[in-house]
Length: 274
Image (cartoon, rainbow, N blue to C red; front, side, top):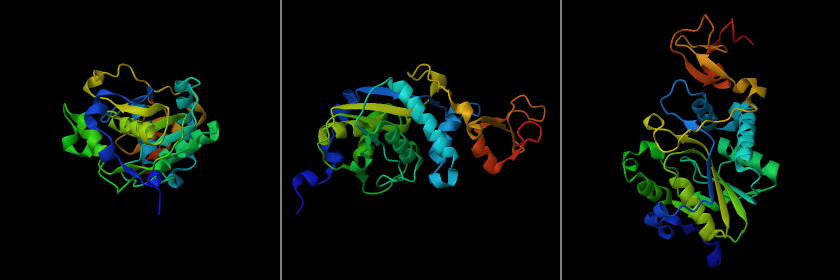
């Protein structure tokens, strides 16, 4: 018979949404860049989308490993020497438990290999997959944070532990921040964690930037070392160009990450030939 300490805690019973709306449990919160959902010109938006859609990672190698290395570099810079003992990530909507074949799992592996921290995402599990929050209409509007907290906790469990120390909590695209609040609160209350350092790869942007986030621009330092991660321009004729001023580029192109464009578009013989 298992002891009470081993029984997973249902967070729908353990976390009060109203209290969590008032008190942010993250000791630091960093966002690397912006995600503009409808932009055809934002390269950082395409970069984080390429990261999320490289699932399973085996189908996007070696590019996704290089992208994870880039994001790990960016996280290291934004943390400015902060030390942590553990790393956890927010589960994706399709995950009932942590799946190491997902890009988020690979990013955590890269961070742990660099720092010696240990992955504790396995402490969390859900009763099943669920629709992404962005697709659920009732999770928007003036009460979105409270509604999203309740949505996150409804089927989320944590295995109790006594870890101590600090944890780096990683999420990909933040909207209201409900997920990191829930995970950080759970880690402090039920895993004995003392400090939670939260990092999101991007924030969903609204209202032409008048959404309270100020200027959020992803630093691209180091990306130039990886040609497959370069910005390209894809025209309506499904040809991608390395040069945004190429005379063969049709009007109103969209930007894309090169390795993504290579899957569906031909390379311009003038500027993007191999």
